[in-house]
Length: 103
Image (cartoon, rainbow, N blue to C red):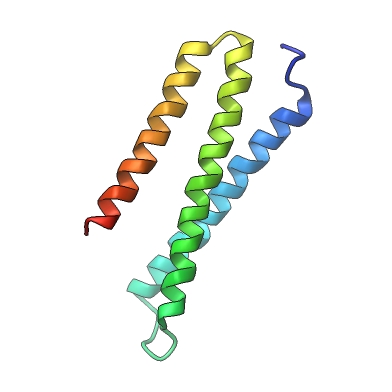
C-alpha cells in the first residue's frame, strides 16, 4: 500500500462515508414518518427543514468521502475507475438536486 496516504486518511474517508450514511438514514426515517405514521398535530414546516437538512448533509458528506477515497485509490494505482466513480457520484447528486428543485 502507498505510504503517501497514511492510515489516518483512510480512516477519515471511511468515517466521513459512515457519517453520510447515518445522516441519510435519519433523513429517510424522518421522510418515512412524515408520509406514514406521523400525526398532523406533530407535523410542522420546521420538520421538513430538518428532514431536508439531513439529506443534504448526507449528500455533501458522501461527496467529500468519495473524493477522499478517489485520491487514495488514485495514488495506489486505480486512477481511472476512482475518477470515474467520484465524477459519476457528483453528477448524480447534482442531477438529483436539480430534479428535486423542478418538482
